[in-house]
Length: 128
Image (cartoon, rainbow, N blue to C red; front, side, top):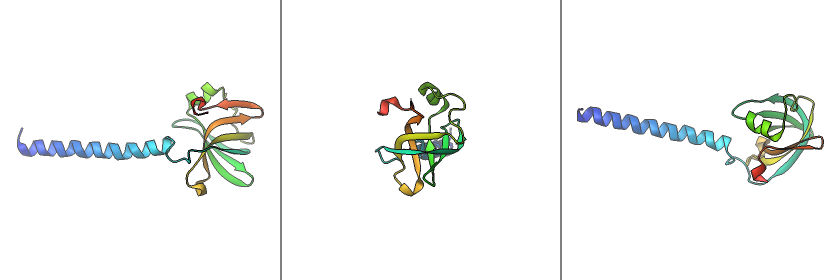
């Protein structure tokens, strides 16, 4: 292999690794806990909309006239906690305990536990 091809391959490999590291880091920052405050709050409100699925479910919840986005677990995590199809639906009252976004203006909560009525669903039991 010529020295020029070797340098080109090395640069291409380095660029590929750099792009993967940057884009992967952004995904981890959003889907992990880095964007949260590290402390828990509690919200109670009515579910306005539901989008369940991967990488995680999203609920829009009316909390005293303000719309909050509540991140719930991946489908397997929701199922493991005991949630069934239809439990999280428009018009259902929900109490969520979890970590809010560090940027309070974002009105976003990553739920660790949910309550529907008196029933508790531990999405992240290891975080209690």
